[in-house]
Image (cartoon, rainbow, N blue to C red; front, side):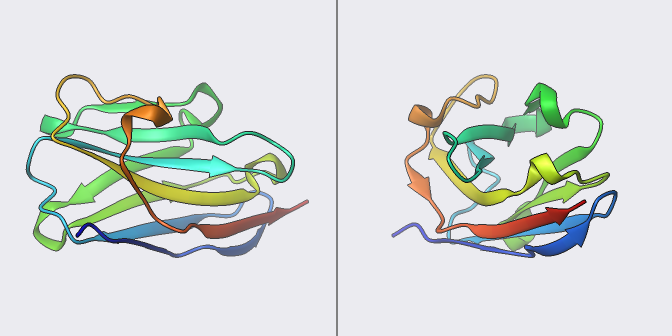
Length: 125
């Protein structure tokens, strides 16, 4: 059974940083995608960043240059380093896994099978 548990959310002021973690029950070195999504109040869920085999990454345009996705295969943990946070980054952040996926990592949510329950990030102006 695959389990994902996010942590590291919280409240920061504009310009601050947070590092989110997602502990998983899967071996992340295997072929899969791991990704971060977010959902702001009243908005649709959107892809933020994804990482696949050989460290290939995909980022939403809105976070390029500010966020960095990474993984620690030894710890089966996914990370999202978020810098220069702005109020529009306020959302619940979810981690997700597409087990057995091949190719370049995608931000299309339909590709992902397993989801965490999310962690709240709030950025005040």
